[in-house]
Length: 291
Image (cartoon, rainbow, N blue to C red):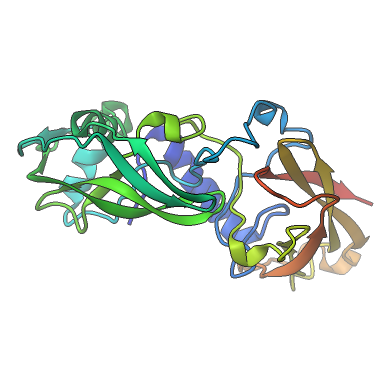
């Protein structure tokens, strides 16, 4: 199973695995806050200063692996071909509708449609030869292109959007790319540090976020930690900085004891805001452990 295969995303997948294993501070995890966000340094919200919080519809912010939704491949060669951008279009391009309609958190809206040839070029661009320079698999073939819908991860939870669906014998399920024009999104196709805050994580009045902090490790060679979340609010962002404090250090005899690489479960942490979250973007940050 994979979601994206460019070098940047390969690094992100590795980071994701590390986060899941270690319950890194500042990361919404588990049932408490689905959708992992890459932690950033405190004050990292500067790039979001221009986000149009009052715009309706609110721009869609895609999180996680990116705009392509990929369920997987039926063969290793097919996966390798996709990773290296060897994708062959073996199907006629369907007509492009003038508009497509999407149900967003702030209502139903019509958007100009993205052309299928543009979507295909973007899908093919998810891979590049540098991902496997010594490999030369046969191209993976796309034999059908249809206009349908698919779910995509956003900072407001999973959203079902109109999508171009690219299918072929090597795909487990069609590869989906949003059929909405680029102006429907914020920073189309660019990585971002927003985290997912779904409706079930936000109180009715929007002033409390159900977040998560790491639980306690059972490893005797690790310090006992206590975590809290500090909030920095701006007109466009809410930065949640998880701060770890050392409660006690390991006993000298325990410092060299090995620990199994077992994940530490996250625990819920309620974060109170001074104003309702509204359309602002939530960003996760981490601060170093404090004695």
